[in-house]
Structures are given as structure tokens and as C-alpha cells.
Length: 88
Image (cartoon, rainbow, N blue to C red; front, top):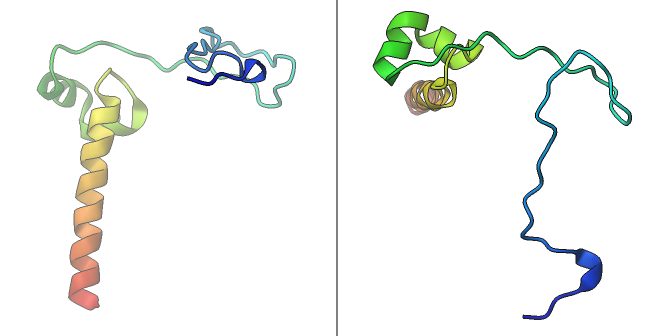
């Protein structure tokens, strides 16, 4: 494998800063916000029962936020596809 030294090692993972504070750091224009309230759930069903579907998907109240966001996207895309095929 040909390797250029000026590219560096492209396989090294970049570790972004792990803190979220309200301060503006050098080179940033927008202050970081505090992380949202987060409580873990044992299952997706428990998360939806406790925090609600939209609370889980849109407010990131637990670790299943991205999964419910994909489900919400699938629902909206299906409704949009049906509307386009009906009116198109």
C-alpha cells in the first residue's frame, strides 16, 4: 500500500471533546448547550410507554431516540408516498 506521509494516518479515530459546557471555546461561534435530561430504559417499548413516542424521538429522553426517529421518518415517508401517489 502506497502511503503519503503528509496525509497522516487515516485510520486513527478522531476523538472529539467529551464535554458539553455553556462556554464558547476558541474557534467556535456558537456556545455549547447543556446535555438534555437522559434516563436509560430497558427496552424500546418501555421507553415509548414511559416517555411517549414523540418524547423519545424528538426530545432524546433516552437511548432509543435515534431508533424512534427512524421509525418516525418511515411513517412520514410512507404518508408522503401515499399522498403523492394519490394526488399525482
